[in-house]
Image (cartoon, rainbow, N blue to C red; front, side, top):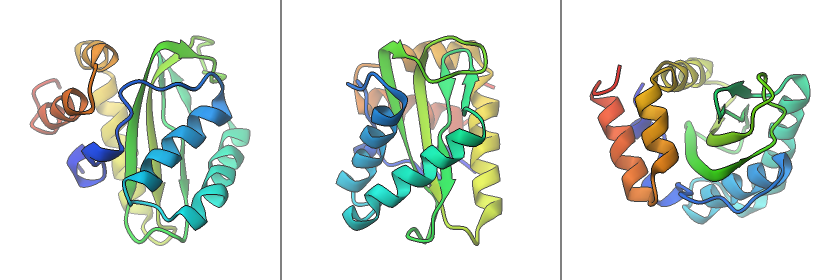
Length: 157
């Protein structure tokens, strides 16, 4: 699975304004609503579902990266977005560091394979220091999407 399969340029947040875990999740979900990937009516429920997943254990996987995600019946295909916080914020990350890169995913409950393939792709690409550094330095959604396309074409791994 490639980034281009589930992330649309118009949902990418190149400079997040949030300063807390719940506010960054809400900001990313709002970007999916604005892009037309999620219905406004499902916003609150999706935020609650992601926060409930965070209670099981932080999706802040370390090295400045978090992958908040949930399965939700309101979507009929996997949707996701990327957000960058230049200053980083506390996300209860496994390594205790602030998080700068966020990959938020929402997938249908009946498509667990897509969900797992997306998580696998994200974690594989984020092992590459150059890819992460370039993402953290990106200033526009277009720059971020270009990096994701390069990752899709195996320019980093």
